[in-house]
Amino acid sequence: MRLSQTKIDSYGQNGYLVVPGLVSEAKVEAIRADAAKLCRGVYPCDDLPPVLAEWSDEQAVAQYLCIHHPHRISPYMLEMVAHKGMAEVMTQIVAPDIKCMQSMLFLKPAGFPGQAWHQDEIYIPTRDRSLVGGWIALDDATVENGCLWVLPGSHAKGYLHPQREHECPEEFDSASESYGFDESGEIPVECKAGDVVFFNGYLLHRSRKNRSDQFRRVLVNHYMNAYSLLPWQMKPEERSASADFRNVIMVAGKDPYAWKGYERGGKTHVRRFNPVALETD
Image (cartoon, rainbow, N blue to C red; front, top):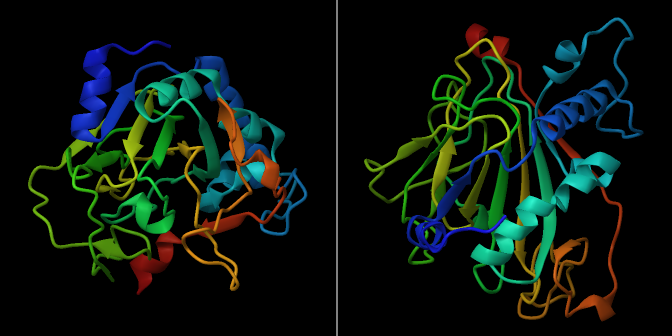
């Protein structure tokens, strides 16, 4: 996948880029099927216990808002981390050498909330501001079902906005919201299943509640320049200047820190949500 210079420049200026049809229909279907396996408890994992045999896949998936790090237990999700087309795009908009540290599978059933304004770099700090999300739409993402909303250009200064608790529990999950900026320029990023949205770690973005009667499923992988250290989930004895999270997957180029070795395995993390609870509060 070769990008035009216009698209590369657009990513630099706006902080995000939509690449239509980057993931094939067959791959999208396979990710959906694997998501159902995860939610049914097919893969051994304490966070994802088996469901009753008579449950449909839709019932199993509807338990969860998000599964963090599914690639740690699913061989197919691990394969998707290194998707060839995504890797090719990132070598053009980020760096020739790319590593991945996180995957997130958003199921977002009908009635489930979105996430308030935030910047991913707050949660995953990089040394060189190279963090990028690769957001694979597994369903058509629309305003009605809770697509991404972004503030174009909000990444440019590399400023991390302060955060606070939001006051919209009916709209957003429990994560804090970023504030202190003019949000009037926000735009929706509607896209088709198989499209991939790439966005800078400093870009302000959010999503709203799913007001449709369908899922809004998305697989998001987070990547960065392999030449940058990753001071994430630091150990007590580490210093921020030299800490380097090593539970990473190389997806393009070479790893200059390969001599350090790699960590493998690790836990998943599951986020549930009960929309009925909000209606009865």
